Length: 296
Length: 280
Image (cartoon, rainbow over all chains, first blue to last red; front, side, top):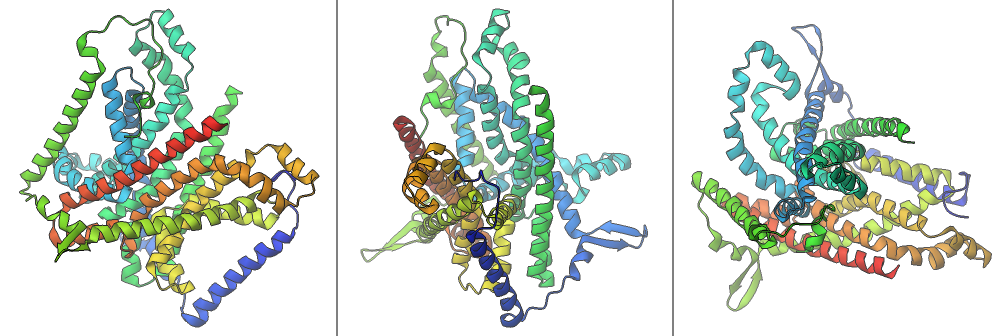
């Protein structure tokens, strides 16, 4: 009788579930067909996924696919930046001195207790008006030469959008760093005391213990949750659409409005996110099982 | 503040300490921290002044309330706060209902129940909330004929948080020892009876602290509804900024409002956690 232990079988509950699901689907079709009299038109979607390029005579990615690529790019770089920041903050959280602990604690609590949307709006002002001009990105890209520019375009997207891309990336990374810091802290604190004591007994300094004994082990432990954070980042990157970063959700909004095809566009975009995130989840799960093999 | 100094991450064990110099005392760190925070604020203030920003803090109280002829008239920020809390309250009720149903379906012997709950969980987990809000607002709202964006928003948030609530509840139900199920079967209770009289009452204290965390998330995530014309706190803030161009003052104030609410709730969560841990 313990739940979830028996093999699934047909049950009176199946009757309830199936009736509800079928009833819901029938109701939706009835409403769409007879009440809203909505005529589905999926033919606009493929044109936004790929377009025929006259110059190169081949198919090229169009807005939605380019948006998805931007989303993945922004999540990838944000994950790297956030990991660096997050490891620093995580180490600071476990420091023996109060000052680094206070700083890291203040940062983490501040980010975790303010909703992402107001945070993004607030920081976008600072980042776009203060940090971005300081970085001088536009000049850096222009001075890179044609080959360098091609490489940069693959890594960071089109040059004219680089500042837009960077401000989205930095805001996302700052948000994610707080969560990564907590993951890293948990990783460091999971290292048994004996490791520290062993380090001291062979005469290592605290810094050497951290660098050569604790961090290598802790990082190995936090790789699986960090991979999970990548999926979270892909999902959270949709929020930067609100500050006009041109990734998948932002382009979806624009296309849905210009084509007046809200149903088709949003369902397609939802499916695109789902496919990417679900594929990542499966891949990370498989990797985790493989990596865990030598530990068993 | 919710955390004591111990919660800030205990320092790893180290060999016997040498006597500390005065500049190694904790209060020096606190002073340094405060100085640093002050420096950050000063930088932000200078940055705003550099773009010729005109601070108008004196206008802020009017966004909370105004007193006209001895009568208090609430301002937009208070309305927004009310709507946010309304969303969180009803969202919590619906979230708990959805979570419980999904958790029970997932633990049931019924094949379609397991499949349905699995599909629901994976869909919610693998798509962004913003896209879910869009689909609820642009697709499901007209199809289902809901003519109130506020309730579309509440429903969407409830379905989103329901996925997390159901996982918490499943863990809570699974944490009840097997013997309890067997005992309830022995005394002749049906499965529904076992859930109602034996298992859920025992699982509830375990689930309570993480479920309160869901309330915090509901408040945080309700800000996303500003995307679809639900007049909660963030929307009111954005409208006010559109009217007055006082972006810094308003975002600081609204950020502080969220901070106070969520930190108070988080403090409540850790208090509950400690109580539950002490009882076990």
